Length: 553
Ligand SMILES: C[S@@+](CC[C@H](N)C(=O)[O-])C[C@H]1O[C@@H](n2cnc3c(N)ncnc32)[C@H](O)[C@@H]1O
Image 1 (cartoon, helix red, strand yellow):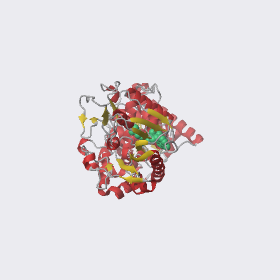
Image 2 (tube, protein in one colour):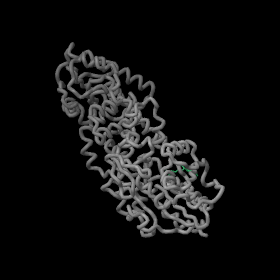
Image 3 (cartoon, helix red, strand yellow):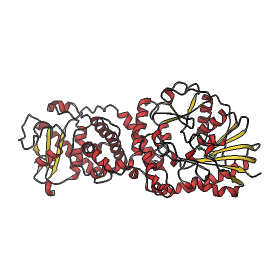
Image 4 (cartoon, helix red, strand yellow):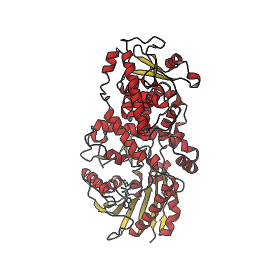
């Protein structure tokens, strides 16, 4: 019997099996942790007195040994052939276990089979000495990217902050490529969260704390969805996890690497990746099309641009029938020729439609209420209208001004609450792109699916009603309003049509001819309704609602 109550079954070469006299899960967890820190040291733990596993270490170890590792189980422990370091392992495990017990640290998380740690590249190990030399804890390459991705998940899922805001909060020193890669990883986790957690669930007996859960999620996304080489995905996830959970993450992800794809392929991904309340609401509103909507959220959205008048599309851009330019997902807008000169701006193809439907005329006085970052303001100004852009948020006002400056557009910008602001004189027309739950933008902002709750819809609808009432007061008699939201929830769209009459607004239905590039988006009732499953062969579009009203004379 050795210190820590651990008895070696085999310590020859590099594969170590420890036969525990009792099924002490804390020791198992401590060993898992230790193996994470030991780099290329692999081990298998087999508790005795634990049902079928007792007395069958060799069979169990073979079942769980990392691919390509020779099994040395059953051979006698030989001094000088690696025995010294299993003793070290046992002593450290024991110390670790005692310290954990004293501190009452997070307990075990059920995984009993350790595999190579953060420095492992999954090659067969070399000599024992060489193995020990790899314990210098050199962080694996790519760790800053994964740390940033984990911070993004923490911000969005734990603190419920918008992903865009969390991206802005990443350290300024982070390389732009690392930032983009972190964004891509976090967005994939958010997009496929339900599926990822389902893949993980058979391998977890207890809920790990959020930092370990996020490391696992990142690992699964990289292994199964982002084509990261398995050794890099596992090593970085292990290094990312809190130390006490390195072994757990290591073991689980090795399982996922071996079996996860088959599990993933058997899942109903659209259903799992859509929060239940959204699925039910969309099913009530759109019937069986809910599945196509959810499927459209599974992948990243293309980059859509709205051109300045007379601009030429960049190479590789598809010119959409509504006039937007479309480039593949992942295209960096700042790399495109013409960006700095103001030849175009980023705007989803659907987001460009409300301003088109307002039909701005040169010289008309038009208010753009709730204006930042300014996509619709730019459309109105580029059409020659005299635009007043109203935005409440100071930070977003700054962004609006920056964008307008790059596009060389003259606009009056007012920082104010549009629900309370009174213009010096009434407007000819108003575009009200009201704040909403943004459930139409989930393919671009996958955090929205997790940040919003059913109760947010009603609150957003009430705020929209107040803004619509205020907008009606800002109009000349006979003036027109286009009211829009980027929500798929009917409470934030269609429901406003019935209420508008009480505000002195007449609904003026659109005709299909008002939108020759996308007539199918004009409903029989005469309002605009786009959904992510529209234009599937082209890459879809955001979900938008828009309706036109006229102020009674
Ligand atoms: C959907 S975004 C607008 C997008 C913008 N129209 C565009 O096309 O780029 C909503 C904007 O409304 C602003 N906002 C929210 N409530 C507001 C209010 N009461 N008055 C003015 N702006 C408001 C938000 O800060 C946000 O910038």
